[in-house]
Image (cartoon, rainbow, N blue to C red; front, side, top):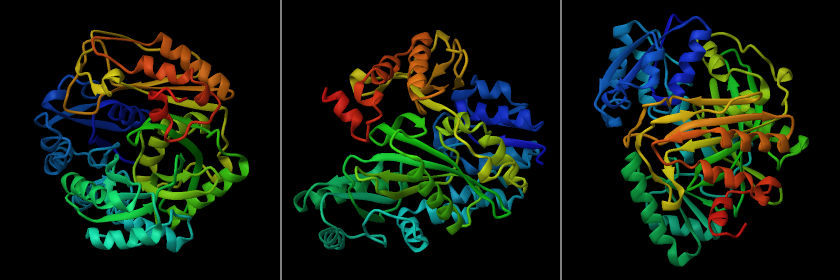
Length: 449
């Protein structure tokens, strides 16, 4: 087992990894930018190293600085968390070249699944259902239009290297296709320095259902049920829950089997997520694989009684998974709300500032993952998430009631938040009936549901 782990991240996920390490008797190293000098993760870790200025490109994305910090502190492993360098194959390779364990998949697998068009081809070859579309990357709008005519409209245009909703546009007809393709391609170049695009038939108003998997280097792959992430805005998730209200046992079993098949097809190790789109006729299609731990992993931890972060560390150290597929049972129903410093009434504009006072909810079946405290500054440099509130109930009705109570108890003073907006969703009839799909927030804002 590792003696010391450096966490190449910040905020609540850095705190989460530090806690997992401490529970396992592993020493920790925090890295921080000058803007995060007073952040909670720097206090909780055994050591803390400044790696650069506030801008992420100069600190949390600064690979040489992070590698230097790891070598200088004697860390034998690095956990990347989510975001930043978590799916950066160059970083994973640099760790390997410097004899530092990367707590995640190999750089080769990150490359294979990070390129969305290559991932589609891999899934097609493995027999995992995919949305009809192109099998190879496209660079030219003329070629793209020819392929679009074969697929049929509406068309989803996506960046091969994309993520977080960047480089993604929907074309409703041949008339708007060229404009949408060019816009998406420019976004891809600006965000990922890659002009490779691919096309898919746009699945209208689907559910977004993802399966959590974890695999070790001894050939064991386990699926830990699914999460429904359909409540999202601009492809950014807001509420996640498990199990999905749209799935029955038979459909769940099939999706889990295909998720395991997908992981095996690429020789995957560590924690990862296979994301599917589910249409009205209960057909599901592979969308992408996230080769990292996700924000909403704690929803799965609640219903499966597992420690995914701790298991990632064990797997990276070469250990066998501590559980098998037969051990995984879903207990009750979990819901997570992401609480952000933002103004929903102003198109969700971020609301940076200093938290002067905060009160976090608690009680039976309530978990709060956060790095916030009284006096903590929400800077404009990074994601505006303040906390993740997760509840576990015996069933979905109880979980919704618990989440309402938790949000009623939560107090954040000094910055504006989306607390009231999240609460209003929990009172919505469509959401409470378990019928929300990926168009829900748009229709909710328009007063249509």
